[in-house]
Length: 258
Image 1 (spheres, rainbow, N blue to C red):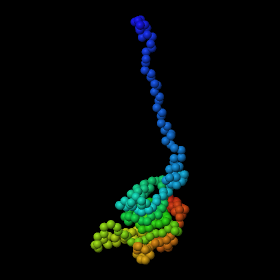
Image 2 (cartoon, one colour; image 1 turned 90 degrees about the vertical axis):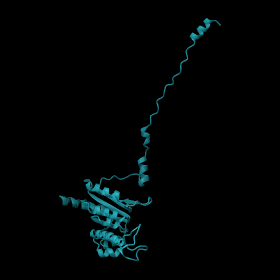
Image 3 (cartoon, rainbow, N blue to C red; image 1 turned 180 degrees about the horizontal axis):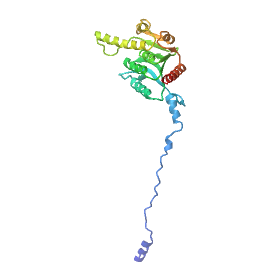
Image 4 (spheres, helix red, strand yellow; image 1 turned 120 degrees about the vertical axis):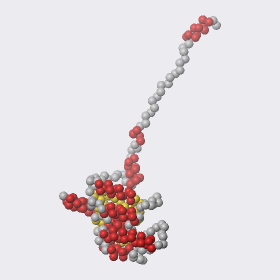
């Protein structure tokens, strides 16, 4: 093979160049794909047991006092509680909010911390806006002062209220001062209830210290109509009665201001 042939072969062979693969654009995430159709309804079913939540344009605010009223000690996770540090800021905000004209307080509570319950009751009693309370199921123990702290109170016919002496848990020191402390705390509850309801102090103390009615405690269980008879609650009623009454008080408050 001569040199001329080699030169011709080298010149006629096309040069090998690397093949460039065109880069495909990365698929853009579909932002709308995150919104699964029916998600809001699914959440409503999970959290509230219903697909639709009725809109609320009312000027009446509802506060619920349910389970155990939690005070300075955090209750176990399995307990349903009403935390006073949640309720008190709500009441302050309601008092300052001009768009809210009245408050309905729904109670279904076993009681709880005495000072926390009295704090909520005192704030409700000192509000300038009309307040109406409704005892549903039960308004026991320190729930009694909260129930009577409103301008007008209702109790369901089947609802009950337990009235008993103040209990003390934790460290108890066997000195006369312990009894005096309990007695003073008890007087705070009695004075508040009798000042914000029509029940006589003598009758309330009688109900509080009754023996033989409660199996493991001292006190009384007052049912619906009896609570009205004793002057503890204003009237037997339900939801429509409570809402109707607070609307009536709102209108009366407007006329009084003008």
